[in-house]
Image (cartoon, rainbow, N blue to C red; front, side, top):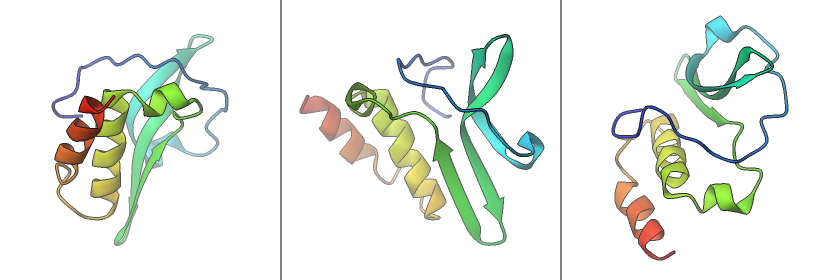
Length: 98
């Protein structure tokens, strides 16, 4: 995830196991639970369709984190077929208002 730290820590609930073939998605971030890496953030493409998925976001403080905002807005832009930086000003302005 270009421009973001290599490791990001969020206090959130990584409580559900991924069901399906992980080889069919592009895993962007994982969490290690019980010695096993589990996908937390990933993308998927099929034909012209694009999906950005994040398991994070169960708590309000996760959404208040500027890094989460940047990541989520970049994922939204990517899924919409827009340049990933399209919402950068919005994400940064939002973080300044906190």
